[in-house]
Length: 81
Image (tube, rainbow, N blue to C red):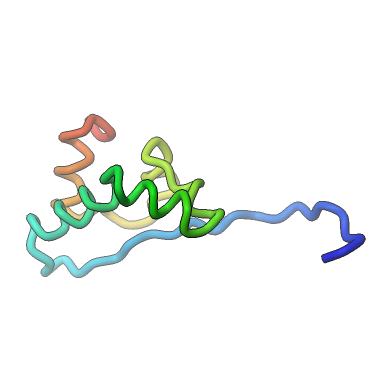
């Protein structure tokens, strides 16, 4: 808007939710696809907020348990111990 100064606000994170019935390998592949370099290009160019989706903060504020498949991926790449 014109002539409106900066406004402090809060951020709202987004999380992917899947059923616990989703096969572990499917959740693993979905998580791996999210962090694939070609997806990075889509995120960076698709929407300004897409640039803020970063692996180093992917699990910040996580409010629910990770699916075992996602957990396996994050462990493999060293995000989780």
